[in-house]
Image (cartoon, rainbow, N blue to C red):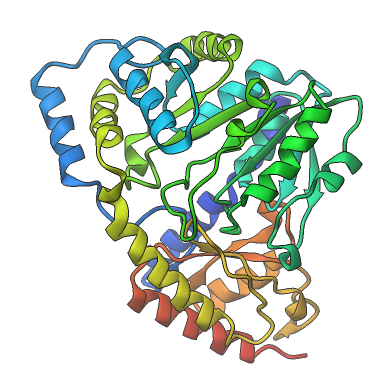
Length: 398
């Protein structure tokens, strides 16, 4: 007898987590696997942030915090939005959650009804579509291509819009492509929103601190769309605090209130100790992060150079995050022994078994002709992994 709900059975496992689990199992069995699958900085949390957490423990921050977060933390986030993004969010418009993933889930569950359509420019982060499905919504994939740097246009959004369209979700810098939306790119989205006042947009800016060119721009700052945009951010990527679990939103007041209500029935507030650490991080000079960003830029250049040497891999030059998302269409149809490689999932399985390198197939991101390579690893590991991939690809049969 199957007692599981239809809801959980319809939900897909995170492809990144699945690939990480598979590579970990192989390692436990003695296989030398290099995993380039997880979106996690390989740096440690800054010492001053850790010290703030220790101090919070000593000061007995051990009681339930307010559901949307401590007031001084929300005030610090409000200041950060103004300082870094020129966005005006009052502290009451901010909700702190257990990671940006929960922030996004709160917003979607508070706004999407069964049958509502949500536009997802592909490639998109794996969890967007699953959260939409969990809310009863319908993900509508809007395909982009490497030739346009994986950017979506107003015309493409218009072509996929119906009377049921309720929301658009995108990230910049983008996971998985590393693409960074410029002023003209964001103006395309803003122009679309101005024409469709019934559509909300979630702007996922979790990789804001890892941008290699120019200044990060926020969609909510564009004329005429502030009340339609929910700005999502957090501490995981920029401050190497993945395990601390702290994300937040800036949103219209009515939606911030709704998210507080939703969160109050799911998890209550984010960890009190994490919040005190987050306060220290957000009050710090953003230049504290320069060393990590410089290291990622150096790795990006190394990985792009090596990826271009792999037959059948076509890549753009990502301007942010820590991913390369090459198009591997030229390899589909080739054979690995008796197996035909019909999809990026087939290629990733082959590379894991043959080269002992874990990547994430593009199907999970809505782009089945690509694979995601995370370069949040040491330069030595990256060189070894990409050489293994090159050797394995060269052994494929046409």
